[in-house]
Length: 170
Image 1 (spheres, helix red, strand yellow):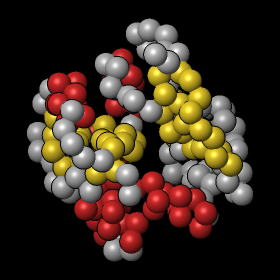
Image 2 (cartoon, one colour):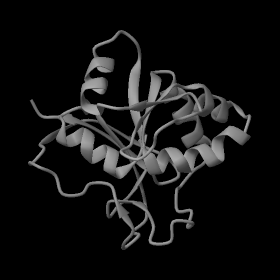
Image 3 (cartoon, helix red, strand yellow):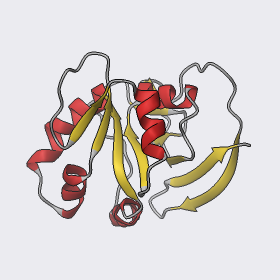
């Protein structure tokens, strides 16, 4: 989820700006059928673990039961069905070579930039919300090199969100 101006968090991190409705929930439930691993950065992992384990609805069960990989330089242990990566680039490359469904970076700007800089992203799925936040936490920060993308798919939702799917240009 990203604002039109490229932010994933408002200046006030408690401000809930995500456009969400039943159509978005249905899309996510269908999307989860293709995923068997979530990837998080430390901050996002810590935020998620304070929220999801207390919930029991269908969405929460997926969030709680799906295996997770966590990128962190400071954590020493994890819970919540998560594995702490000690050599993230190598471990994610190895995981990608294994049979299974898709892995998805579910949250974390720093983790996203790490994966981008290590050429570990096969597909970018951005749900653009119709809002200009004007500041906050950016999704894409400075990268080591230009990254050309090609459009693969777009989906418009009645709530005003637009899903854009890009893949790295070959």
